[in-house]
Length: 387
Image (tube, rainbow, N blue to C red; front, side):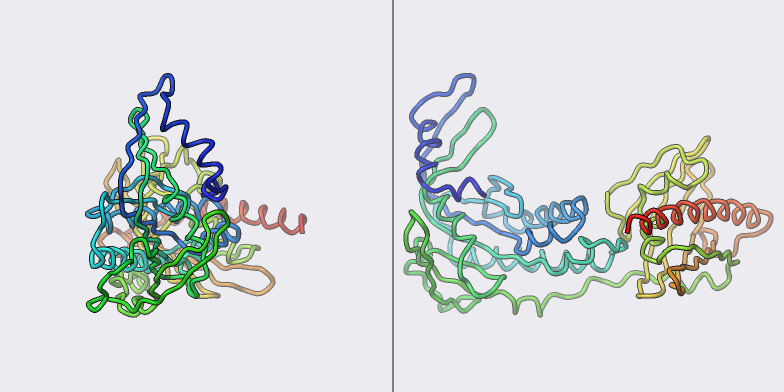
C-alpha cells in the first residue's frame, strides 16, 4: 500500500506509460471501466506484527485473509492481496443492500474464525495470544479504473484506486466500520438499511477533501456464537499409570518445547524426520514422526490451559502396526523456575495399557522425557547466562 501513498504524481509517471504504449516481451492491454471497489482491511495488523513472533503472526493473517473471500466472492472479484487487506472489485455499481450484506457476512465470519482459533489454541506465543484483538474494516468506493492485463496477470490502477487506498487511513472514530465514499453513497436510500450511517470527511494531500458516510460494526460481535465445545479427554486418564519428573525450567519454556512440533527432532530418541500440516500447533493439528521401521501419526486432541497448570493431550497412531495410544502431559508450575511434568497413557479405545506393553511404553516415554528435560534445561541455562 505504500505505493499508493506516493500520490498522483507517481501514478502519472509510472502507470500512464503502460496505458499508451506497448511493453516488449509482454502481451499488455489496458481497459478503462466503472466499478465498485471493496477493500476489507484487518485493523491492528502493524501492532500485531511488531509485538509477536513473525512466523506465527504471518500464518494467522494469511488464514484470516483466506476466510474473507468466501464471504464476498459471489459479488466481488479478488484482484490483489496487499499485506493485511484484500483489493476486490465488481464491474458496475453493486447495490447498497448487497454491500451491507457482504460486509456483514465477512465481518461475522472473520470474528467467528478468531473464536475458533482461540478455542483450538495450544501455542502461548504472542501472536497466538494476541490474535483475538485483531479487527476488521471495509472501504467502499465507486469510480473508474484501468484493468491492465499483462500476460495472465491483471493489475488495477487509476486515481480512484488511489482514493480507495488513501481512505484506509481516516478519522473514523472506531476500528471496525464500513466507510462508503460519497461517489458510491450518493442518493442511496437507507430507510431499510441494516445500519445507522453518519457523514464524515478527510483531507488528503493532492486528492483534497474526500466526503464519505460510515457505520460502526462493533455491535455485530454480540450476535456471534461461540464455536462448539470439544470433547474433554482429561478425565479419562485417572485409570492410567503415572510417570513424573521435575524440569529446572519455567513452565512456559517447557510447554513451548513439548507442544512445538518442530522441536521434537531435538530430543525424541530415534526420530529421523517430522512432517506437520501447519507451522502452528492447534487442536486438530497433525504431524508424522518417522523412525526406523515405523511412522507415527500424531493428532493434537486437547489443551486445558491455566496459569500454573496445563494439560496437553495427543493421539498417536503407528502407521506400521496400527496401534493407537492416547498420551497425557500435565505441567505444573513450581517455585524457583521449576516445572513438574506428569505423563500418562491409554490405549486408543480409552483403556489402561495392559502388561507387558505398559512397561515398554512407559520406559520408552521416560527416555523421551529425560531427553526433553536435558534439552529444555540447557536452553534455560543459556537464557539465564544471556540475561
